[in-house]
Amino acid sequence: MGSSLTVGAVIITMGNRPDELRALLDSVAKQEGGPVQVVVVGNGSPVPDVPEGVRTVELPENLGIPGGRNVGIEAFGPNGRDVDILLFLDDDGLLASHDTAELCREAFTADPGLGIISFRIADPDTGATQRRHVPRLRAADPMRSSRVTTFLGGANAVRTRVFADVGGLPDAFFYAHEETDLAWRALDAGWMIDYRSDMVLYHPTTAPSRHAVYHRMVARNRVWLARRNLPVPLVPVYLGVWMLLTLVRRPSRPALKAWFGGFREGWTTPCGPRRPMKWRTVWRLTRLGRPPVI
Image (tube, rainbow, N blue to C red; front, side, top):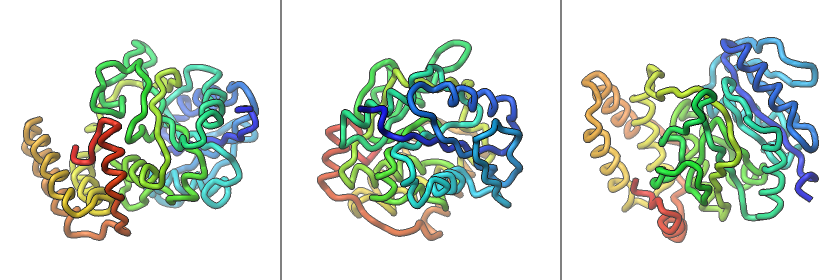
């Protein structure tokens, strides 16, 4: 019955990883069950050569990760409605098994309330999963699947009805926390999110701070996330906890300066529409192990 669900894939690229992109596309083409339709979005760059049948969209400017993925969603019709499921995959990743798409079909068919699946990311050489890639507080065992409250942006599957219900990713975020923004809106609409350790995307081990804008974007978008989604009493609690955690981690002076600059920017710039989650959603997040104060 799971095989009746149609699957698409959205991959955004800067055009600088042609070999990795081709390997990823090959791994998608080898998926069991019905064929996976693929759209590759060149985010402000030309798309490298791709196999026949793979659709491409070349954007004149870099719209950021959420903006590029939203273009990919719309390539499958409004809110991606031309397919039932969309995979979002980093262009330097690789699906480890040939049954990932079929496992997604089975999972979404078995659980009508399931809206998003977060895959496990593993290093292709060591098989290790970084703690930050397990989307829950209790992350010591990456092999344990569970319900979660957020997901990994470059290794996931989304039921396209979620986009119809709550909209796409927040374009203005550009980079960082756009997944949590979507996750909170989806949970508030009644959808659930699973982390599945048996659905694996191989991806080289990296540090997020390799991006020059990391510290500013993380801080700015954290403020936007709270302003957009949290009930008023929780906004200062959530942001206060994250400020304390940032200080405890003792970043370098330049990193801390960038972080506080981004934090200030988050308060002084528009964050987009505010739709605070219901208090019952706060309780649901708490029961799932991650109250929205951390």
